[in-house]
Amino acid sequence: MMKRYQYGNPNAMTVLIQLVDDHDLAVIENEIAEIQRLTNADFHLLAIKVNNWNKDLSPWEAPAVFGSEPFGSGAADTLAEVLQYTTDQNKTYLIGGYSLSGLFALWAAYQTDVFKGVAAASPSIWFPQFTDYMREHRILSRCVYLSLGDKEPKTRNQIMSAVGEKIQEAYDILNNQGVNSTLEWNQGNHFKEPDLRTARAFAWLIKAIDT
Image 1 (tube, rainbow, N blue to C red):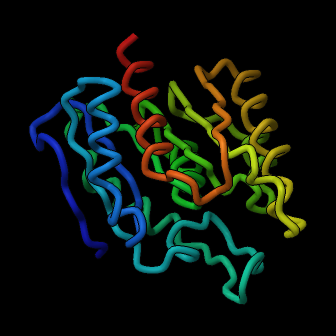
Image 2 (image 1 turned 90 degrees about the horizontal axis):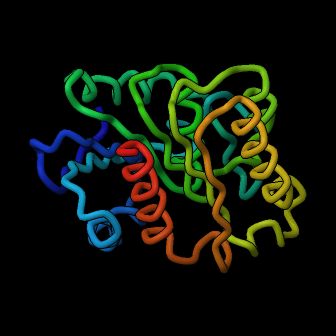
Image 3 (image 1 turned 180 degrees about the vertical axis):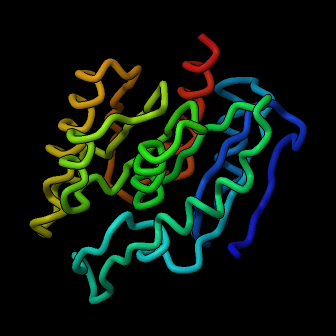
């Protein structure tokens, strides 16, 4: 079982679910404050801390692209655990995250229709074969937010440098399938203001779901 951290109003009808690590938790209060500033919404944020980032959030196995740790195929098990917290059919569940957590959120929305929206902030959309998967399947969420830092494609890593092309490809796929989606370009590299980027992603979703 993964450890859960809860923020906001536990009785709120809008539930934000985010898979996190220690870096996310260190700034999550900033994220919550920014969501509140942007929306004035009543929400409950459920932050679920993964045990192994590369394994627990990866939809399928892939070789390492930085360092020596490959990607596992633990996303299905992670999603099964997440779904235990989405059983109240009166509530609206939105899933999101940053980096590989953002990719997981996208993938999860292809597996179940329980999530009304996906907040994918600077997702690891370079992940091998992921945009192919998107093209061959249909997402089950109504709204999708995508973002990327304008310096993220400027890396010497050949696989990760394709992230700019891949995020545009993902956005085009969603648009062509009639999904309410947006793509926001942020200033900076992948490590700039992840808390505020994630907050903007969730805030956009909250407003999109209400309209």
